[in-house]
Image (cartoon, rainbow, N blue to C red; front, side, top):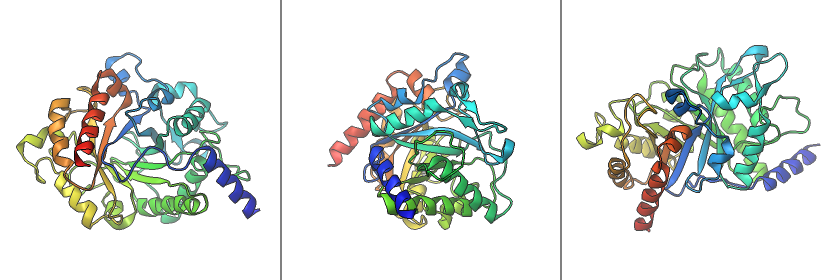
Length: 341
């Protein structure tokens, strides 16, 4: 039986390709959050397209599906929120857990046709559970999520919101205190690495902390509690955001230097990539949006650090409403990388 399951997993990894769009040896990656229709909510008009629409963009490498908002919802099942895109999902009986055939179809297209990395982001501003009551509960939930969203196992009875498609990993976007999150992160990492050892496919674990260092919510994980492949630092809505760059490059202003030091001396993964998290439009965040010309100056600075991995955008709906923004970012990053070669 073990050999049969191994063969099936190997087949699935071949169908979906090995590693998707993120290149951890490059600094011109662009990641974007999808699922919350931020522009539509602000403008009062529908703006969010289906997932595959954004995957078709050659300027995007990583898409973070946002969000898994509850671990233990109705019927003891997790719950998801995709704003307007959730209208095209149903729910499994006696639960609040989405079943989303369209997203299943789009994940497969994103990975096999467009070579994108697809991560599921956990948390968000509406997450309020506060983590787990015990380390054993955290480990149990991590195993459940891997069965739900990792490679499909024929003998498993776990509900799968995205059908047979398998995501490329998980992102943590916790914005309030969470308990027992380290054993949760460690178990997810262990499950992904165990599957990688069988299939050869790389799975990712990322986090999205605020820019003040140390991040109060995620510090236990970031300071050696878990192994991350990348961190998507939110350089907005804070004193250390992009809009503080002209006034200094230290921990009291724009503090990428501090996060570079974390990457090289504190992180368990010394090759971890640090991304600049940015709002994509004037209404995408409370504060911190800067235009392409100002952002180019920031990118010239951060590109001098070996830990720099690229840009993370909040969010897809805002970015596409800001005409030329994503293309301009991609051109600047490609230019920086070309001159560095």
